Image 1 (spheres, rainbow, N blue to C red):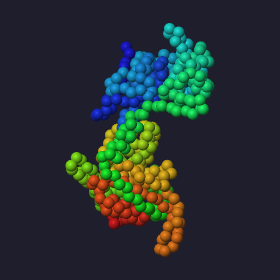
Image 2: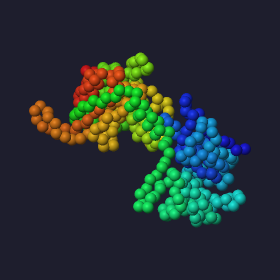
Image 3: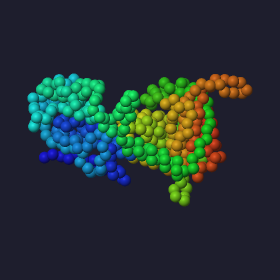
Image 4: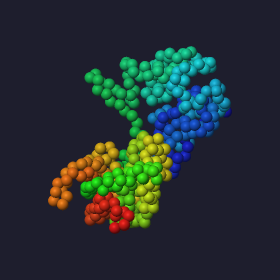
Length: 399
């Protein structure tokens, strides 16, 4: 008896998901708990595992479509592996191309190899537009690639690149839930908060020297590199403790202050920018900060950040410098009241003790909600960050 593959419940207030990439195709045999399809919500992405071992008999919702929680998106026929081959997701292209299975498609249907089916889903090419060259008329990945590379004479669909007479192209693609949510929150922040940004610059010489001096010992003891972000997290905790308004939030007609520091760290994920949270950052060591951030970055690329890891947060740090940004005005992550923007480190001349010297300098920016944070506190907060980073011993001495 077939088993329905349904969209699982993924959290409160989430009623629909966006179908990402199917890791399998119709006709594939899969093992229990093998990832079947990636789903996206406005907060995170996750895979749906196979409930049983068996054959995927039907996929009813393709990549790019929306589906409601509980909706059937495919079907699985439980059973043993009929051919003794590896599960679909672990097959190599060479294995698929050289497959010599003896079964025939029922009702004269064409046999499409899994890799070819995945490529057709990605490119939007129909099986009827591809010439099959595999054994027994099987449609291979290479066949789809040739079809994708060849000129198209048919009228393009709305989601395909549309060419004009002079060769100019445009392509329409659906906005994913994560991207839609990012857009909504950015607009919300601009409309509902009184946002201002203040700037300063930091001489990064002391931090760079500390990293160079202790990098080998740090890696040997903690098995993780000593980065810049841990210094800024610890500096932010020190500054937030001194200026609690920046760590507070507006809730209706009330102001909410926190005695803990849950700091969001903006990282680039496979589907867009996300902000997982360092819980109780004030209790974390440098090594714990670096390990947690490294783990966030790795899992963000794999779309494996959990929804609960993105919720909450009292303050945010974003580092545009990793992408080459010299200066920017970050936007707060509602309902938070502040966000610290780090930028690129550039060697440039500055005046020190009446002399011009070359130092590694970084511009920093604090965007804050003026409803709860006054300009004096915002400027003083950023000045405190500067003092701590330029003299990291303050973190140990707590001065």
